[in-house]
Image 1 (tube, rainbow, N blue to C red):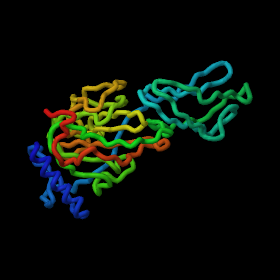
Image 2: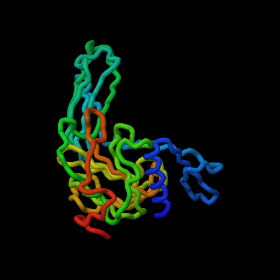
Image 3: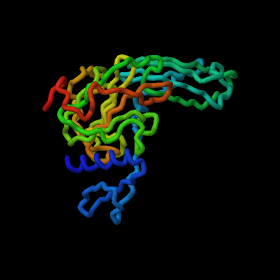
Image 4: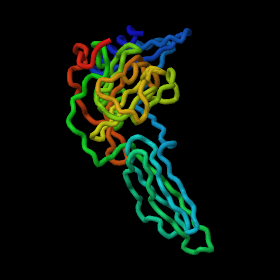
Length: 298
């Protein structure tokens, strides 16, 4: 497993340098996956995607409370992180109190707020409308502070296989400044910065349904969030709402989700206004250097 990850890492480094190298993925009859720059018969061109799926519908909800005077629309945030919301009402019929423009608000963690109260213009006729709720985790009013991130793992040294603005997957706003580091499955992953765990996934095996695989999202004091992707199933040892210190063990690296080999995908994101985007960051030492003994080895 280790050998395959580093072979793939070398291929990806070469691909990044050439900017035109095609990488192929081949699965033999035994299910063994091979990556190569050679067009092996039956192989498929490897297409990298940079997607992250976080299902928040069960934790950020629009609720309608009916009463004698009409209806009240409120939003509930069950996350351990602030959430920016935007409520728009379209196709409004016979309703007083409907806003002409979308309502935007930032809800603190674990809170709710009333955004609008509607009443029928003509009491003997029904009112109708179509609500549309948009939201993004984080408070866009907070600004990132300068911070050099310790390496978020123990052991190594390991190799950076894809950096910022990669040609194969790090080209979307959410992942433009992400770092992919090839490492054996089971490598201890530690928090690169203290903060509150706000979202985790721990039960995905193999490719699964979520391109991110198993992951941990940690909210920092300045509103930025460190996200650790493709973690080993069942290895996440922290829970949502928990405060973690920099250097504390949070999980172990894996090969889950949209992963082409065992590695850690680490990215720092912030809400820029109803959208999460990755932001540039620096590690406190070169990735390919000796292990970071400040957080210990194993």
